[in-house]
Image 1: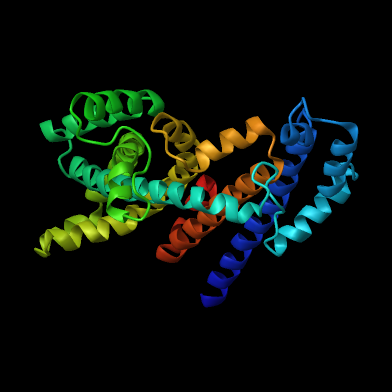
Image 2: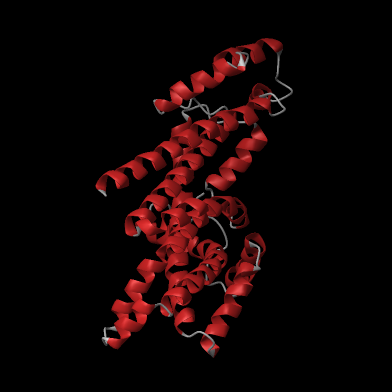
Length: 323
């Protein structure tokens, strides 16, 4: 049994590695083929002399063959050297780190709220099937899944920031004060949470309905076991689709985060990625894309491994729904 578990873990991590190699090639290829000259973006059209452009091309190896550039990029990436930002002029990792920290805080807060609210209401809905509470939760989740994040963000910003003055209008406040930063991120996190929590409610409810009517549930109730113990057992058996969906939500959060960060003027990865693409800062775009690919692939692999370890019988389910 232990050997089969280790084999599955090794296989899943190997799949993740292969996916990352393929994604790294795609990321580099798309940016290599993108129109425009990063050197001209750096110096500006008015100051772009042939000599200066040639110097910049030589400095960043922009004239080297494609495979040569890709090989150098991968080799440097393995040593965590992603070069210098064309726009900022210093190492990409140092340039991106402050923005990444803000985005990870926002995504982490959103994921925490989504899981707590989504799983809790999903369990409540399943245990009250057909009742008014179940219908109210189902209607709320339907409304939540129908709202575009950026549009919802504008509405919440207008009502709770502009009209009521409860939340800050924009930015992240005083970076040296964690509580102030958390307060500034609360409304954006709520904006992202509404859609994800609504989806998780539906998934949790569907998974729990199968367990609520299961034979082991009837047996546990007949033995007069505590309700909390019964719910824990049901959640464990219902965990595969819930955990897998949570991994999928994490991937989608980074996409939705780009729009929400721009709505709330949050200087995270979303704003940085948008400005870097506009400016043509290729090293920064490559690093952000690769970093998110690594994060999503690892999350997918870890979720699948966790599902398999909790219940090896769900192996086929987790394999069919992985990211």
